[in-house]
Image 1 (cartoon, helix red, strand yellow):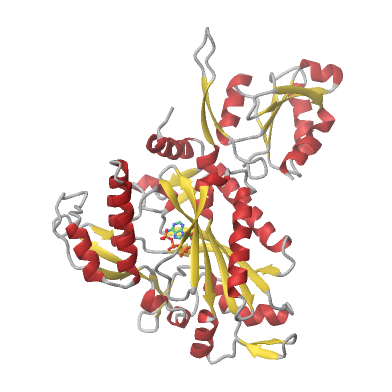
Image 2: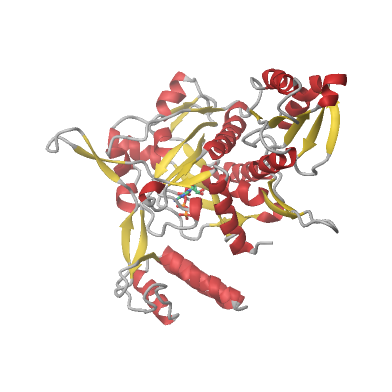
Length: 479
Ligand code: ATP
């Protein structure tokens, strides 16, 4: 069985082998930290996105969704603070020319210390780093790296440059003739599309505070240290919700959304101890409180979602830069104000990686006379790419026709898969590997009494049920 690091590698290989995730432009040797979702990966990703969307919008009467464009007026990013502040402290190794994010470099050292059993030392190092980051003390950070003798993994030396800020936004040109073109950015977060539409949605939807606007979509960041598979990508997808509230009520709503979002993750059947909250010491330029929900990936506890109390920072700045009033009239207290905002922001790709990390299971099925094993993805049925596989035992005797009838009965209700090639055992294993929760087999007995064998993915238990009950049974489990 795989160790954690091996397990991570095994999941990456599995994703490729079974059509979940491919390296982008692979035939040209790939593009670093950019990935494509394959036939089953895109289904799983869509199901996660839909599940989030439904729980945010359909299940909350005071939250509506939008779909804003990726390109936005360049002033948006000036107003939001991203042009001036959206950067990470970096340091370069003079010998290898390799660039590191300072916090990642120090965290890697802390990981090393922890592995050597020096947990207290690791914690002290991280606490010192947090303090220096919070104070923007770059000289102090460089000194910490040197004092701790942190070395470049490529050159092996500690020959470092000064610590510098590096902006993470991608820019491009809008317009066809270069003299006329203006520089615009690929959005580094989806949130600003919500802020600039605050008045549109509030007025046309006649929304009353407190209310939320949700959105899913692509975001782009020129991540320097782009590794760890889909955990850190340069093009990724976010699922964000901005909740507009009365100033002064932010603490209460911040706590509310922390709890709500944790409940959502737990609803995926993941054990509680795999999650923890991590409060931010260094707050982003827009926040008055912020924390992460961290999940224990095979590469350790890492950020999955951010919950941020963003005050009125964004709306106030958009008001200033656009000269449009971002005010709300609260008839209950007879007052005009710029609403405060609590944001929940979760990465779709990281959620995907969490689901796979939980689901990926290697099982030893050996008996006294036979060595056997299987890899099964125990994905929650509601998220599984395919819900039902319909398998005629043999390709003749009228069995494919009956199987096709069952397919026709089910396929407009949920995703089904039909297959008649190979032995039934091999077909079951292929369905296990992509996480299909139910397989039904049509055999000779089906012709006699109208029943089929239904096989449950996780327990591998097989039952006989009437073919007419298949649709209802699957629907019950995926509802
Ligand atoms: P990190 O500290 O890991 O760089 P962040 O704090 O910058 O993340 P946020 O700006 O809070 O991230 O973005 C919200 C969410 O978007 C994150 O919790 C994460 O799930 C996702 N996310 C951010 N950056 C990336 C990325 N490069 N690749 C994949 N997902 C990302």
